[in-house]
Amino acid sequence: MFGSIVVGTDGSDTATQAVRQAIELARALGGRIELVSAYEPVSDARLRESIDVPEDLQWIVNPREDVEATLEAAASEVRAAGVEVEVFARQGDPADAILDVAEERGSDLIVLGNKGMTGAKRFLLGSVPNKVSHHAPCSVLIIRTV
Image (cartoon, rainbow, N blue to C red; front, side, top):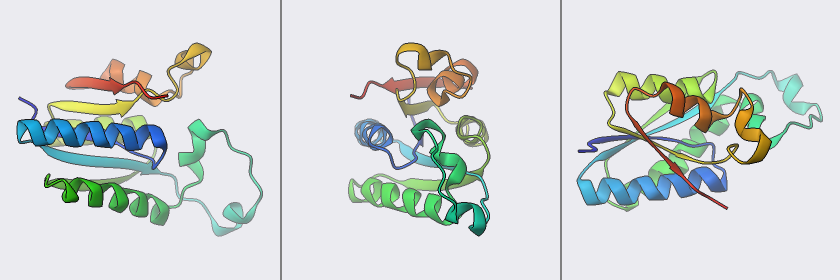
């Protein structure tokens, strides 16, 4: 039923909870996990600047190396649970990255944390769970986190 499960992660607590829920589903259903994280290339000069970026937009200032480290940490947890995993570091918007991988892999389910979906924030254009839920090529499970 859910052979391929896409999980978006940025290393946050919300994303970690989504990864753990996806692991449980994949183990129970014999599925595999496709881990996705997005990045924007950032110059070294910009990284050295003191930038106050809202948490929902931190992906903009993460260089690819940080994204790959985040993906590998999550992939290690998936492998330790005995679940097959593949990682995808994609340049650009996180929601688009998740949607692209789900479409390319013919995935059955996308799992995300609900970060950005409470109060007025849920109406922001940049909400990853909101955008994914409206444009997904498959079912979407949004994990409620605290």
